[in-house]
Image (cartoon, rainbow, N blue to C red; front, side, top):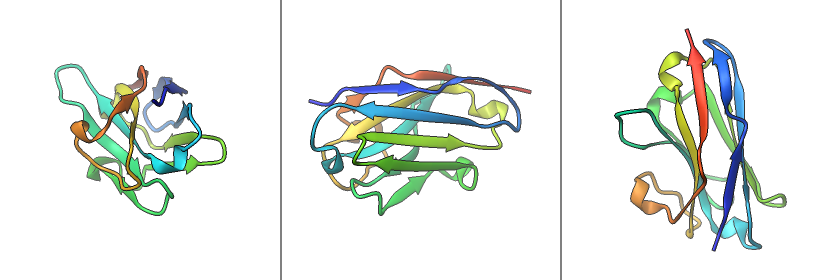
Length: 124
């Protein structure tokens, strides 16, 4: 069982930056691939970024490539999402997710554990 707690959301102007963090419980964090999803009202939840258990493989959805950076610290059981050059279309609830597999997945159904979500709002 893994519990995930996100932090770092908030309100920012377009062009600004935010850093999201996710703290995971448990002692086998490196065995879990991690991902950040987001969901805006009326849309499906989408995978924004994913990272393998070792951190050696990373995925970004095309719309955030070059602006967002995902990273993990297996010693501290944390995964982060640095978001730069934020745009109003990035406004959503962002969720941290864990999958008991060293390889990451992209679909929602690949992930077994979810955080409560944190709101990110980007004003124009």
